Length: 77
Image 1: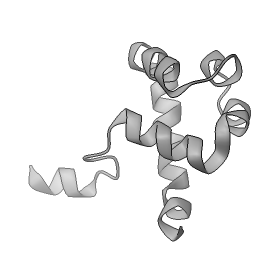
Image 2 (image 1 turned 90 degrees about the vertical axis):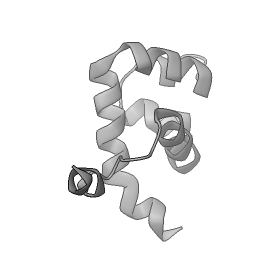
Image 3 (image 1 turned 30 degrees about the horizontal axis):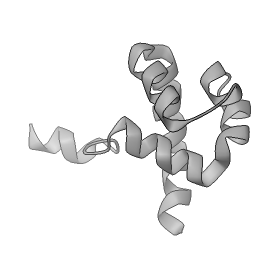
């Protein structure tokens, strides 16, 4: 069981942490281009985005996938 957690790149990372990291790295403008969801394009904020992403599994999965792809770039900073 412990081995699964160590192989999961998202283990221990909350949705809020992911969103804050992605917003700091890309900004909401670029996030809105990369993931076409309204909460990134219309009056974006961390709070409104979290509310939407917690209710919408397909959008949350897209954010998680982008975070995993961006992780090597985040670790270089």
